[in-house]
Image 1 (cartoon, rainbow, N blue to C red):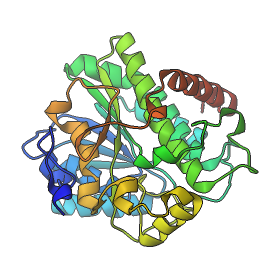
Image 2: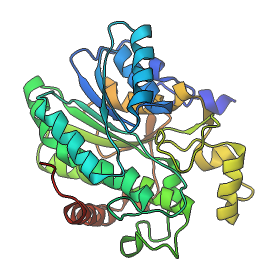
Image 3: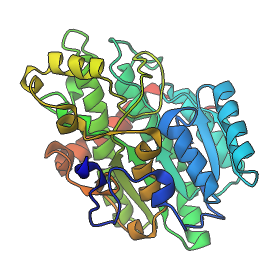
Length: 341
């Protein structure tokens, strides 16, 4: 499979692992938050960042599972600095509590990796009465990022090193609803499609990163924001109704499901839809590359795939759509959530 090993501008390829793309990088003194860190690419991202000396806070819904991951990492890397904090991205009150607790601890924050997510659920509403995939994959991360920005700005100023925000999206964003984001129909059950709703939320991840990058540049903040497609991961862990690692984990059965929903893809191969199949170590690579590699220093508002800059859909590059999503998201978090006391 020559195309899997083909190196591009960065010197890395689709087959590069998270350890390979961060080899020789010293992250000592840096602090990162990784959401959805208790399994899959979230746990591998945590492990590799810790391996490079980064202090990682795992934002997780399942603290027991996260504890097992932490123990395994510390056993492998005795010097690793890893902590766990409870975080349910589908709940705006949980997001607010997490951010409040983190900020009150006075810790620095150099890197924020918005990784957690759900995929292809049946129609459900979050506790805030927002369609569950949009609420979990986009809105929860939007609020989390917003609430942690001041801490990231302060950290960047004090340590003299630019902060980095990484949104884990998917090439699946290309399969969103025709209008991209269904602002007037977010909670419309009658027109709901699980795969398109997932794609909508992944499109929102890119639009969020792009508009955030624009605003950070306008404010002259020393923080960058980018989005990544991790790739299709070789695993059978596909649980549509559970929080998992924020990446499209595709088996042959899921590809068939996508093709049933989108007949035009009937004769299209898996690698043409979401790229070559990867293992977990390869799937975490692009996230770790964008979070740590010196070649990404100062780059912002970009979309990465296979450890290289890539081109997303035209909708993902729509600046008006990005601004509209920002305003829509701000209205939702103000309407649906109240700060914890």
